[in-house]
Image 1 (tube, rainbow, N blue to C red):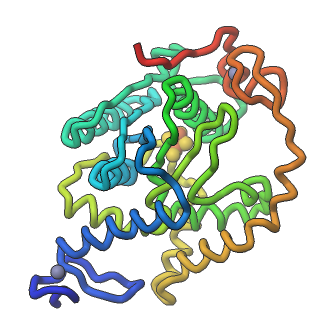
Image 2: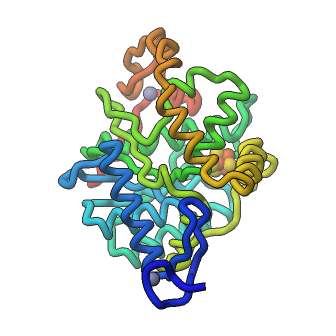
Length: 301
Ligand code: Q46
Ligand code: ZN
Ligand code: ZN
């Protein structure tokens, strides 16, 4: 098959909208879509300093690549989770990706901070729960300590659709109240944005291939059996039968999100007595989980 816009051979068949595109026109389509997402949801202003959280995987690498190409002032942060060989490889990929892009990369290693990696802590809390808590705290605090205007993550349409789907299945209205392409900054919470919000996983993989981005393919060993993967499978089956299912589901959610707003207003935040970041109790969940009595400071020297 030929590209819709030129004589070249098709590189990809898009299902929604339905069209064949060559490599060049697919990349243009992808970048235009990211640009449109940024404009539509007012994610970033051109002069803002953006911290991109790079995991070594495809989504965050593509996010950094496209933001740089669109002219944003970006720096990257990699959090080495200390999960054996998986984390070593992830860090090596992040280093290579940033070198190729020519953007500064900062690295925070959990094992260096706490002497233990994720998965090595004796706790009743599920691994992914304290891993997520740790990552979110670190990238926010890192951005805050260093005066970044925004934190960009690589979440794609499949991630978002499956997350909303699973939140509905569990009626987790707290989550449903605050998901979306942008979480505005407030006080010590730095703004969080998801530039790949309207792009499918399949499109992200294709873009990485077209632009020669190398990335870590392996999943985290703790991700096995994660229910989000099951939700993704179900959504993929539906998408195949009815192209556009995922984007329509996510856009419909954004229109109805205000129904869950009431859930948010009940939470009052004070300040953590250790780190001074927003907290529900006297200590924030990060400082209390890691037993900190002294705040971590990520200011770049
Ligand atoms: S939360 Fe869980 Fe991930 Fe952390 S422990 Fe691995 S799978 S990395 S997105
Ligand atoms: Zn073409
Ligand atoms: Zn704290």
